[in-house]
Image (cartoon, rainbow, N blue to C red):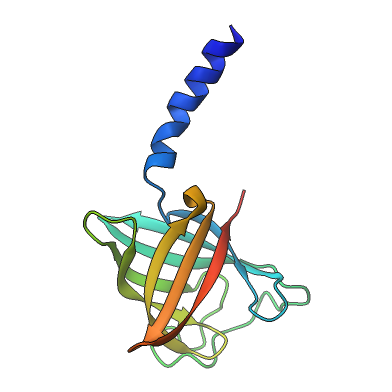
Length: 143
């Protein structure tokens, strides 16, 4: 009986392992302190990914903070609920999503973004760049 239950659970989980996706809840990590900074929720609609800040998790973070450095339609909007990832699509035939932008609410700058699930989808490499200059952060899937 135990073997049948284990086999069933493996069969149900196999599709998730076969095609990891950026869709879900992610913890962002501070580059300097390595502490969890925020929770971002990435959703998909009609093949396009967007991501919003769901929570600020850094100790002492002001939950009412606004994006005062933003220069587009997000100017002075609350960071909690702010759409920071826009217009990202999967590269055909690859487990890579790109073509959109990501906003850094700390400085108001927008970057081209590439999202790559790693470690079976447990982590997400988030690469923000302008031309060929950029940096990569690793986000961790929230439970």
